[in-house]
Amino acid sequence: MGPKSPIYDYLRYKKKFPTVWCPGCGIGTIMGAIIRAVMSLGYDKNDVVMVSGIGCSSRMPAYVDFNTLHTTHGRAIAFATGIKLAKPHLKLIVVTGDGDGLAIGGNHFIHAARRNIDITHILINNSIYGMTGGQYSPTTPRRAFAYTAPYGNIEPDFDVVELGIAAGASFVARTAVYHIIQMGKIIEKALKHKGYSLVDVISQCPVLYGRLNKMRSPVEMLLWQKEHTVDIKVAAKKSPEELEGKYIVGIFKDDPDMPEYVSEYQKLIDSLKE
Image (cartoon, rainbow, N blue to C red):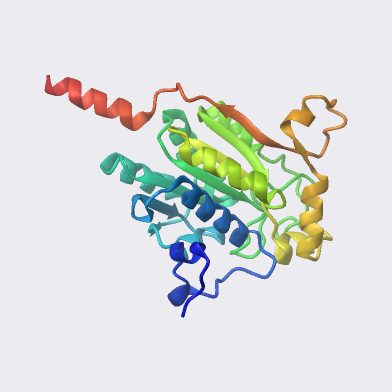
């Protein structure tokens, strides 16, 4: 007799568990939030497609009982674009890490946001390449340590929210694994939004990033998230000096009126038939 929780109806737990993720990793928590959002919205799991590239977070499609596609490094958004154009009625969820989504996959990210294609992009941001051994990534903070930055990272890091807004995404938000209730609500809103939805999720990697940066346990990393995140409404009342070194969390952009790519493409096709 299997587990009774409804969440197990959305998991391939009999064949694929336990997961490959390290103890204390935030990815499993994020996977649970995605599933609960899908359940809350009443989506048929057969109408949901989860696409990923390569990386720790990209193993998620192996565990969820949706339509799933595990693709090549950095190409998840390109594959998802093809699926959305072929089957517009499907709900597309792209899961990437910070390296997979912003380094090798950065070009696809920018242009999918620019087109405002109806994809929900969950960018799991743990500030390091976890699967391949601890190299620094586009979101590794300056002066943070990684195995390819043993003396501290000297490069400025991407602000994922600012990048998404500048590229043209119509829904842009940031949350953190520590803020589990907020994360679930934001993911639900992102799924309901028609257009490119970007959710930057600050997550913990205690085995690599944490250990290299003097946060050796998941608890320490979660407490760090608590202390270094500020709600967007609270942040509006604070000075730049007070916000130094903090991540602002909340919804930064939600524009339902921006033209969505697949709909515009269909209008073009229909006009050519007349």
